[in-house]
Image (cartoon, rainbow, N blue to C red; front, side, top):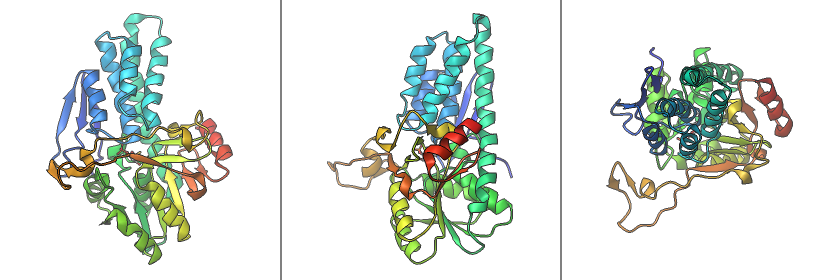
Length: 338
Ligand SMILES: CSC[C@H]1O[C@H](OP(=O)(O)O)[C@H](O)[C@@H]1O
């Protein structure tokens, strides 16, 4: 099976698999301007916390090649989307490499090497998350539910929460996989269902609103999602709808897992109240594919994320360890160990 890798650096250009065109078309966009790379993040041609971090790193290389002010370019790139910590994390990491290089002529190759390192590290980290998390997958015949898209398309390769499901399956687990459609942007229906088909893992797509009934009926034995920013106390920002799933899981006595690299943990944020939630355009709710689904003039509110309080999270699977409450301690230990 050919690994899905949505981000490719050619040495001078960034090639992105345009996720607004999946699953019906596989279109690659070629980018040689950091501003276009930032716009691709905002427009979600590339999306997913780790994937936008890797894209930001290469956008910083493009800015350096243009001899643009790295600080100004970095600010513009980091502002492309506000919630995922990986964007700012990647920009800051690239700026540190440039600042540490005394020879101006060596900065560009050093930045390119660092971006490639970030991309390679991400895939390795995801495989380690999968190895740590696969033991949490349900028994054969029982169900695991995942939300949004946390697979290779959301990362450099392999994925986080979807990677845990993949790791469990590839080790012989034969549990039932369910994924939500994830309105309004449909990352689940358009991207996760496509990825599971590429992986040869049978998965059943459900409407977001069907998750509660399925938990009540015993069809779901655990829930696993990704994350965009994890506060020091374990409160987690993730795709809108995650909080509702966590409350339903808690109510039904079902474990609720988060899978994320330690780079998604933001120890500078004490709790979830400090996480900025991106609000996206109304048309993503009132229309789909350019076709209105609501009457003209309908006003919509479109928060792209919500915050799941740590009390509803059973464990946070990272590449360093499976972190359990109290998260203030276990997350810090994982970050230090990573
Ligand atoms: C592996 S992190 C994926 C994370 O990103 C998604 O958000 P978006 O599609 O808006 O970038 C969602 O929150 C996923 O859990």
